[in-house]
Length: 231
Image (tube, rainbow, N blue to C red; front, side):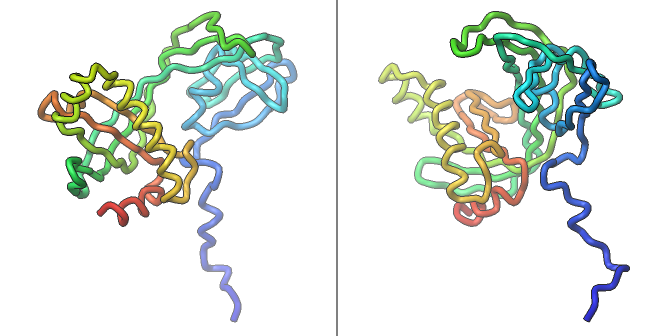
């Protein structure tokens, strides 16, 4: 049999290197040529105004980011520092899919909206990591829908940690990073595909004694194995 040309080829409509399908162009102002394109979801982290952008081993200083034209303008530079963004991430629970009790923990799976705002960046010296400057940024927030796994810590656990004079917030943050590192063992994903937020109080919770850890993946498929294992 022969494949009819009238049948669509779905793979052509799927970009394996981008989750949004929208990219920013990076233009070298010294030659007025295109350096490369950057996915919209990471553009504010990599090509914000003042960013040091690396391309084929060369450093470029981003002098302007045109949001309307989706274009960043960068000039070759020689500097002894790199830039690191500062951002704020908020999660809004859209829909609870299911929950399950695991010992003293109650684990939840649901649809969420993740909003990330890049609020500034640091200039850090190469090799020494010394912060040599900080600059604010005024960039619009980015929101995307995804699926998240989260749980509340029992108040008894929080009380025991307080009695032992242990750093609860630091411990919760460590659990977040440990969970992000473990998740790729159960799902076909990279740890960089996963984001986490640990919060002592979430605005959608009813009491201040409940604590939550979110593991928000970029794709529903990433959490599919976790759904079947836990639920």
